[in-house]
Image (cartoon, rainbow, N blue to C red; front, side, top):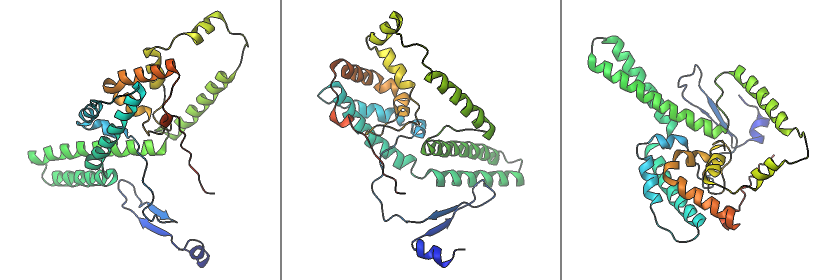
Amino acid sequence: MVNSTWKDTYPTAEVCYMNEGTFYHSPCLLTLYPRDGGSKKPFKYFTMWKTSPMFSTIVQEQWNNQFHGSKMYVVVSKLKKVKVALKELNRVSFSDIQVAELKAYNDMIAAQTAMHLHSSDQLLGDLELQDIHDYKLRHQYYLDLLRQKAKMDWIRASDENTSLFQQSVRQRNSQNQVYSPLITDHNRAILTAPYTAAKMKKALFSIPGVKAPGPDRFDSFFFKDAWSIEGDEVVAAVLDVLQQGKLLKELSHTVITLILK
């Protein structure tokens, strides 16, 4: 399928033909530079973790750890503990989503085939319903994983993408218009108003979860999913920084990714 020039240019290229899954074709994965082990992958929070019945318990247990220092230092230290626990949750319950999704699909098809052959068997009927439920759950996990990895909104139909994009452009253009250089007394009062917990929560919840996380790798998805546990302390820590004007050095970082061209 390739000529000698290709082989000379990409001597370490590899190709892998994967299972077709629910498609009518087999995906082909082409790797030009196989990894030699690679560097350690950075932590990333996945929303599928919150579906685990142990999620709230795990976060609560780690959040109960006691630390001494500024309010922001305490929050950052607890987040580090939560990160370790969530990694373990991922290893135990969500280690290979794609394989689990494919297995659940095959189990569902097998159960449906058996049900067609023995339509009066109640046990097979119950098994079929359970396998369908399991597949839908695993499939949703896989879709959630793809959504976050793609870092984009999930568009159900291609024609919706066009209208959504046009609406976004119109909204951005209206926001960029400057109608007057004057600031009214009402505007001044808003700008100089003291920070409140309600405003802080509103600001955090307005951040899309697909936005790039900070150096701690926790995006807004996590804080929304576990707000009942860590919300009060996070608000107190942020308000303390805004009022005192002091920020931890480890939070004042920027992650830069260099992409070869």
